[in-house]
Image (cartoon, rainbow, N blue to C red; front, top):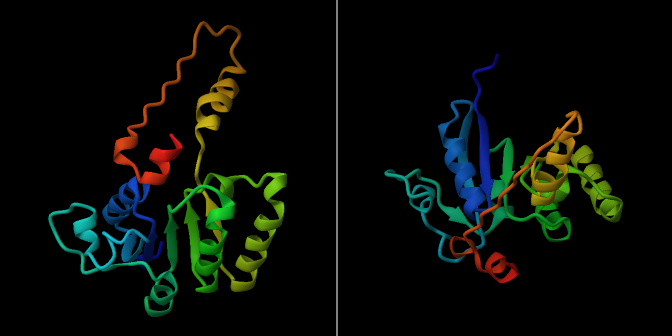
Length: 181
C-alpha cells in the first residue's frame, strides 16, 4: 500500500461540507490543500477558523474554484455544494476541467434518473476525456426514510413496526434551505 497522501480540496462549506472537512482532516491518507465556498463571510478566512478548530491550517477559503484548481496541486475534490444536478453540473464540469477526481454528496449524482440522463452523460463523457472519475455518495431522505426501511424489512416474515424520524434544525442551515423548509 502506498503511503502517498491524497491531496484534497473541499468544495462547499455548509454543515455537510464542514463536517466532511473536519473528518478529512482526521484521515492520515488525506491532506486537505484547498477550500472553496461562495459565502462572502468565509472567503479569505483560514479554513481552521471556518471549521472552528483550535489552529490555523494555512488554507484560505476562496470563491474562485477555477483559479484554485489551476494553482493548487490536488488529486480530489470533495464536493458538498448542492444536491440538484442542474445546479451543480457547472461546478462539476469546472472540477473535471481541472483534471480532478470528484466525490460528491449530491444525491442526483448517486443514481442517474432518466430525466437527468443528458446532463449525467455529459459529465460522464467529460470525466472520461479528462481521465478522472466522479463518485456520487449522497442519499436523499426519501431513500433513507421510505425505500431503505421497505427494502430491509422485505425479507422479514412479520414486521410489527418501523419508526423513522427526521429532525432538521433549519436555524443552523443556510438561508436557501431555511426558505425551502
